[in-house]
Length: 303
Image 1 (tube, rainbow, N blue to C red):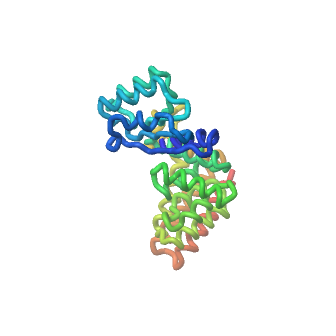
Image 2: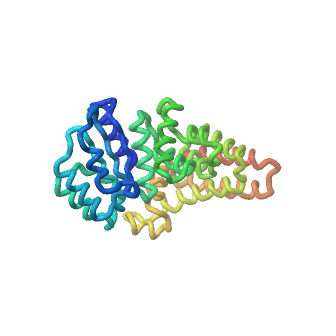
Image 3: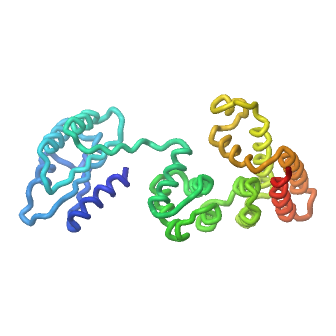
């Protein structure tokens, strides 16, 4: 919603750099105030009136807004921000009938939508980011879209446009630890250098070795589960069969493209051995994890 308002303000300022922007809320908008603000000024100059939380307008103020919208001033842009729902629907319906420009902003509630939002924000800023790195940024920053948008813009500026897991970890280390799942994904995808780098960051930021080896085990078991799924199973049926969300199945299917059955079997053996070592069988858990990561990457090449 804020981005839509900002874009409209930017359009107005492109036409008139001196345009005045005035924020209004129903609680501070007494009857007649809108007519006063939209009347011609002795000093000239355009205005952008941003009426926020318009769903809270009373009947009289709604009528006043609609009356203005029937005969809008040439030098005034009125932006009506409505948060959806049945409340204040008469205002929305009235503006729609008057052919007002409508910008819909559906609520983002699913992880896939948040990932798409992050990727679009980074693209808009001139950068590129993978789905996995976008997920890492969401894990680090949280679900607030304003904070995510700000983080996207900053990351593009800091990295020159190439935003990957390493960049997210580097710039947001103080806000979220590198997870064992990041290490596991890199190892399973055969990215040895990145996997080791993520592993060292994870250990340095306090992630317990047992959590990292658990993530490695879950990642490799995911390969085995999806690789052994019934042929022809798709979508919700496959998700139910495997007990995994669809987005995770799609991710594992992409990861499986570089693996053979022998490689997965070898990787399962590696994580079982690493689990025993990290839980007391090895003097140096960090070394045991580095060794496991290297062997998982090597297992990916087995045919």
